[in-house]
Structure formats: C-alpha cells, structure tokens
Image (cartoon, rainbow, N blue to C red):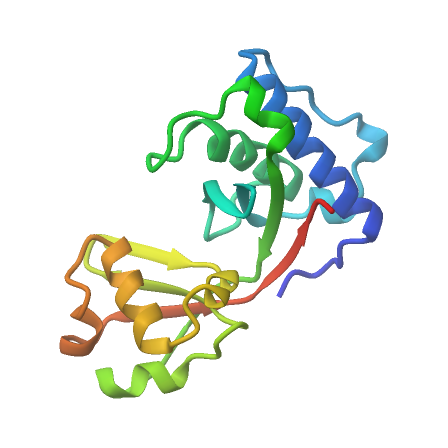
Length: 191
C-alpha cells in the first residue's frame, strides 16, 4: 500500500501539473517543474500512476506505469505527456483539444499475485470495480484499471477483452493458466 495519503491539495497540484504539462508538450514547449515548496512528502514518495484523458466521455489517451520507479510527481508528469502524445491507439492531442480534455489520475498500489487453481476459478477470484488486473503470458502483458469494470462489468468479458488487449486470443484465459496480478487505485479527476 502507498504509505502517505494524498491530501486534497496534493491531488489538485497533480491535476494542475498534468494539465500544464500536456498544454506545454502539445505546444512543443518544455513542461515546467513544480517549485520545491509545493513538493510534499506524498508527492515525493515513489509512486506508480496512470493518466487517463477523455473528451466528452470518450477515451483520448491512457498511459502509466505498473510499478513505482520514480517520485509520484514525476510519474504523473511523464504519463500525462505520454497519454497526450504517445498512446499508439490515438493520434497526438492537438492544441485545440487541450481545453476539452478531462484528466483522471490513478495512483496504483503495488500489484499482488492472484493465486488460483484452474482457469474456471479466475472470474470468481476477481473483485469487480475494485481490482485492477494484470494478465501476463510469457512476454505479453496487459492491464485494465479498476475503472474499466464500469464499461465491462462481467468478469468473463473483462478477462476476454484483457486477453485481446494483450494481443492474445480472447479466450486464452479459459484455456491456459496465466500469471494474474491485482492492484487497487486511488483515483481522482478534474471536476
């Protein structure tokens, strides 16, 4: 679990940083760093995050890290820019789109391996709406954040879509025991 709880102010700082970083990067400018006096212990703690961008409720970009390797403040800034410019599913965000973006940040807990006996046990081992899920098969890996349960509430469908995202056959989870990890998120977004 993350050790330091984010305050309302920490969340506001991260959302503002994400928006300003996207705006600068889309304009091909170097994003500003936060002034040291704004950096709380929670923002400096090692953290893994995903930044999700939507326009009118439709996904426009989502990139993040599953494991913490840098301070949360840097992780959010890096993934906000990457979600805007580097998500292979979308063309880069354009300057006119920036004001239309809605930014959501998910701070991840460390992933835990999910122990299960056989493929048919897997759907019942998940907690819809709570668990983020990582599927791994050899070198292939994919994840869905817990928020994806809102669009795919059925565990079997969730797992099938996750297999497809991993570029594997949609029914791989039914035919083979995969490595499965779960995590939770602290999610917050712009109003």
